[in-house]
Image (cartoon, rainbow, N blue to C red; front, side):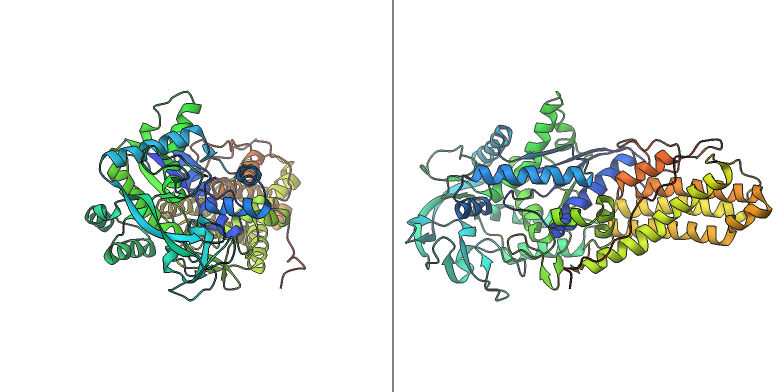
Length: 551
C-alpha cells in the first residue's frame, strides 16, 4: 500500500452526449475510475478526477439529423442525464464538464497551433468519401459498410464495433452513406494532418519502458507501431466542432473529434483550477515530474491514449505522459458487444431502476473485464448482489449491530480477555486492507474487491465459531468480547469497501460512531470504542429478484 503522498490524475473517457450509456460503459471506464480515485484519496494522495461529455462527436450530429433538431439539443439532453446518473451512483468527480466550453476550445486551439508551429501538423490533399445525393463530404461515422477484418456488416468508418479495430472509411467493403444509403464516391479535399509517423521511435521506446501495464494494452500498442504509424487527418468537412486556429482551409471545416476529445483531460484540469480560483494549480498535475497519470478507458480507445495522445503531448512539450492506461476489455451481453448505438445491453438508467446504486456498483466491480471480455447477464448481477453483498457483507453488519442492541442495549461493550481467535479476526482484516491496497495500487480493482469479500467471509465464520447468541445465556463477558472484536473487524472492512460502496460504507461507519466523510485519509481500521452508542440496526441492502423480462 502506498505510504508517501502523491499527486495523481485520474483521466476518464469522455462519453459522447449522443445517447444513454449502458452498464458496459459503466463497468469499462467510469466506475473503475471512481473506485480508484476514492482509494487514492483514502491513502492520502492528491487525486484529481476529470472528464466530461464529448459534445463534438459525429454520433451527435447523426442523431440530431435523425431527429431534425440542432445538435445542442441532443447535447443538453444527454449531458444532463449523465450528470444525474453520476450523482445517483455517488461519483466523486472533481470536474465533469463538456468539450463545448470556451476553455476547452481555447486549450484545443493552443495545442493545435503549437503542434503546427513545431512542424508536427501539415496540410495535405486527400481523397475522401462524398455523398453525391446529399452533395456533401461524409465524416467517418457517416460511412458504414463491412469490416475488412471480421466481416461485420455494420462497421462504421472510424471503427468496427464487433472486433474493435480502428478503421478509415476507405477500408470498408461495400461502403454506403448513412445519410442516403448511396454508394459514396471519392473526391479531393484538403485537411490538416498530425504527423504521427514522426513519433514512432520515441513512442516505441517509451512503451517498451512501461512496467506493470496490462498485457493486452501494451501488446496492442506496440503492434500498432510495428505495423507502421500513419499520419492522420485531424480536421473534417463539418460545421460542428472546434474552429481551426490556423488559416488555409476555408469555411466548412473543423477540428475532428478524436483530436480534441483527448485534449479534454488537459482542458478540464485547467478549468478545475480556474473554478477554484487557483488558475495555475493544473501545473501540479501536468508539469510535475512526480505526478502520476491514469487513464480509464475501454480497449477500443487504447490507441488514442497510448499512441496518439502521447504523440501530441511529446510534440507539444513539457506535459506529462501517461503513467498507466489500465484499459478494460469489453462487456458483452449474450455474446454481443455492449453498444448504445445498437441497443445491446442494459442502460445505466434501466439498471438504476432495478438495483440500489451501491448494489449495482458491487455487482459490476465483481465482474470488471480487466484481463478478458466478460459476458454479463442480469442473472450474474442478481447472484452477486444476493449471495455476496446481501448474504455476506450486509448480513454481517446487520447481525452484529442487532446482537449488540439485543444484549447490550446498543452500547459497544467492554471486552474481556481476548482469545487468539479474537485477535486473529481483527488482525486478518488489517491484513486484508494491506492486500487489497496492493491490488488497488496496481489497478487490480476486481482482485481487491474479492480480497475484501474474503475478509467479510472470515468474520462471518468467526461469529459462527464463537456463537455469541449461545454464550449470551452462559457467559455475557465472552459475548461482549466476541461482539467487540466483530465490530472492530467491521470497521476495517467498511473502510476497505468504501471506494466500492460509498453510500452504505458511510452509513456503516456512522452506525459504529465513526466518521466516514468523503475525501478523508481513511485506508485503515478505526477503533470502535467501548461505550459508544451504535446507530439502529437496519438492513443495508435488499435482496433482488431476476426481472421477469429477462431470458
